[in-house]
Amino acid sequence: MLWCCCNDTPGAETVEALTPSPRRTRVAEPFSLKSSTPDATGRPCELVVEFAKGDTGKSLGLALDTFDDERLHITDLRYGLAREYNRVAPPHSQILTGDYILAVNDVGGDALEMLRQCRDEPVVVLKLRRPLEWRGTIRR
Image (tube, rainbow, N blue to C red; front, top):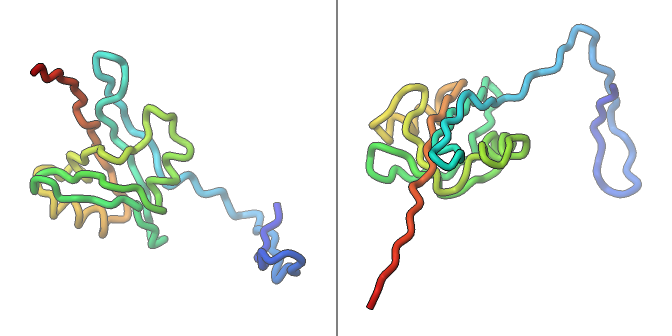
């Protein structure tokens, strides 16, 4: 395996080429699906996903709203670990805009503390729930 650092400009030269040391091991993915609870139709309605931020400084990449002071509402997915997770996760287990975060690292019921956990902790375990979908008919 060869690693290189180079300019991506056409015709650019390699700046540095390194061979990894034999003792270096491949780092596991910084995320994993811990559980998925299906609803009556078989679609997952609740997910538990773990992210290992470590000391990399990477963010989850989630735009969050404190919603009702008890839950967090995912309003957007930006660049970060959540988007990386979605690239490899099955479609039914992806984190989606509109999902609710019920707990972070077993802390639930306090949206501000859950935000702090997302920001400050090196390992973040999210318990997510899909929004309830329903349809109605209005007759005149």
